[in-house]
Length: 113
Length: 114
Image 1 (cartoon, rainbow over the protein chains, first blue to last red):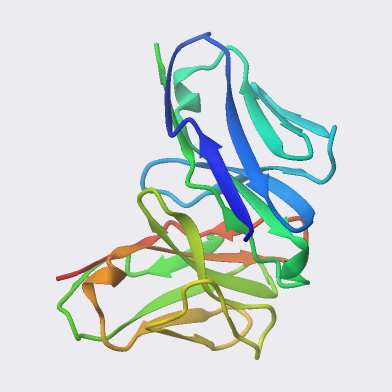
Image 2: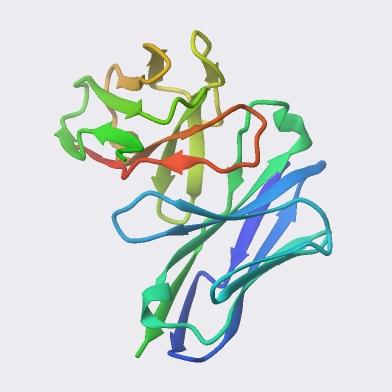
């Protein structure tokens, strides 16, 4: 069964304290791994797409990396405005051309000033 | 730029009542989706429409029906609401099926069934 697990469920950081969020996945074949950011009361907002092991993407203080079994979202010197829930999703081979994604349960990040 | 618009934003129903959640996108996207989000469960796909005129079941379709009214609009109907359908519902769209996975989401419809 295709599955996505994110850890930790919640993370509290001080401003400037770098850390990483983990996304472990089990799929029959990976057609893409995606990171989204979700602010309270809002819909998810797309951040990154990763397709193959070793690939990295960066955006401001965020860097996403991918291995054959997991992805990491590294947050360097976070600011309070980085506080949000970060969602990981995968598109397995079995999804065909439907664009269907399987989401993890998310990691809620709080950055204190 | 409106993007994906969902109505209503909040709704309270009694068990057995029916209602329709509306979704419209103005990005000329072909594919549209309905997800539900529950604490600790992540986003789960209810139904999707890969293109105008087609709809298919997702992971949790029981108790729901959908209509792809035209390219812009994709509605979700609860015929007889149950407390288990209390959730936050998100509509999403993407330019074409099988793309990069960049879904554009609405702000959600928060439904409580008493």
